[in-house]
Every structure is written in C-alpha cells, then in structure tokens.
Length: 314
View 1 (spheres, rainbow, N blue to C red):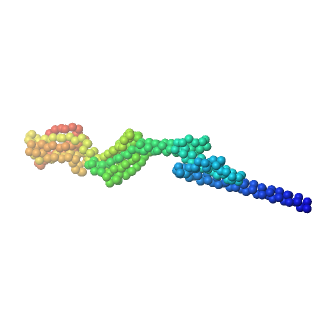
View 2: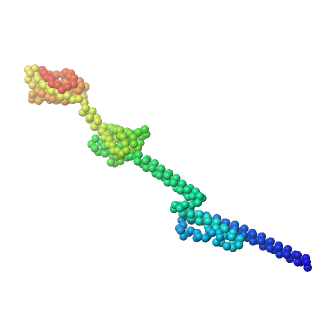
View 3: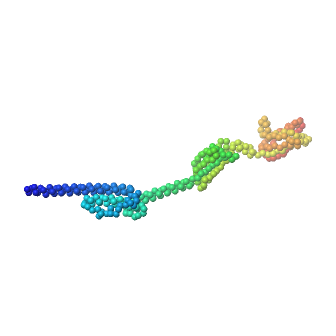
C-alpha cells in the first residue's frame, strides 16, 4: 500500500514535468513563429509603406506591449507582433521622413542614402545634359552653294571641306551641300566636270554660315585667255609710186607659215586705208593689189601704229 502511494506522487510529478516541457516547447515555437511573422510583415510594410497613406498607420496601442495581457505564451505572441508593428511603424515613419518629418538614426540613414543616390543621379544627369547642350551649342551648319558663271546651280559637284581632316559631299539638285562643323577655320574646294576648280576659306565663329562658290567653264577660260592677249590697232595706207591711194589693196599679217593663211587681213577703202586689230608679236606683212607688184616685210607689233606701204606698178 505504501509502495503504491509513493508511486502515485512520482507519476504525478512526471506528468507535470512533461506538461511543463510541452508548454515550454510550444511557447518557443509560438515565439519563433511570431518573430517570423513580424519579419515578413516588416518586409511587406517596407515595400508598401512609401505608397501607403495615413490610413495605413498603426493605431495607437498596437505598439504598446502593456495592452496585451495573458500568460507567457500570449506575451511571446504579443512581443512578436509588437516587433512587427514597430518595424511597420518604422517603415511608415521612413515614408513620413520623405515628406520632411524627423525620424530615428536608422531611418535617417536609409533616407539619407536614398536622397544621396537621387542627388547623385540628378547631379550626373544635370552635368551630362549640360555637356550635351554645350556640344550642341558649339555645332553649326555650313551651307555651300555651287554655281556657274551664269548663276545657274551645278548639281553633282564635289565639295571638299578641310581643316586638319577632310569631308567630301556632292551637291544636290539645287547646287547646295551642308556640313555640320564646330567653330574654327575651314577651306572649301569645289570641282565639277567641264569646270575649273574653285576654293575659298571660311571661318565659323558662333553662327551658321552660307558660302557660294562660282565655277568657271573651261571653254570660258580659253576664251578669256584669248581676250587677255594684248591687241593693237594698225592703220595702213597703201599708195603707188606717184603717191596716189590704191583702193581694194589687200593687207595680210602672218605669224607663221603663209601656207596656213593669215592671222589678220583687211582691204583698203577709197582713201587707200585699212585698219587691223592684231595681237602683240612678230609678223610678216604682205600687201598686194591688182596691176601692182606685191610688197612684203617684217613687222613687230607692240603698240598701236600707222604706216604707209608703196606699191610699184607691175
């Protein structure tokens, strides 16, 4: 009987110990679960906090551990919820800090980091934008128009722009071509088939520039060379040996062989006179008339002159 009585308290103590162990384990499990829920709640609130409004703020008392009564297990749950609510509140406070309200050191650091990053981004953006603006401001348009000496546009002309490096373009149907250039000094050279090349220097100084180049036809240049040769007027009087004027006498100037014909010729009028325009140089002059002997002599032309030729009857 005594042995049975002693076993009964021992069994009771064993059961009590087991219950206490189970309660302790359950409390630890509930505490870990509360901490996990608090951590996940802080992450979600941290992500959604900046986008929430005032209605998302935690009600007063939710953060107060004293408001949560109960046994150790309830206290553990409330502690976990309190941490989660505190973290959510911190996140909401961080969102409030963006509006200018003071916050604790941790949230301030986060806010400062965000502001710093934003500041750096804005600063870099402003710098880059400013640099791009400066580059665009330094670029100008140089428009070259290529014309012939009649003022007609020449399409397909080659225009070369040089300033250390060269760039070549062809003119459009309207005879123009455009180059994008920076400030500086440049040389424009234009060329086209059947035209002489033309060249000009251009200075770009803060503004767009228009330049016109006139190409001279190669045929025109040959004519100009002929026109540029010095010409002189020679007045010739032809008489017979009695001093009478001879009408219709022929005067011919040869600069080379007479087989190729004269360079200039004229016939005397009623007064026995004739005028010829002759280029500067040395000539052989032949004067002839019907019923008269020809006269031939050499003459150097370097100025306007008058001379008399006497023919003898044949």
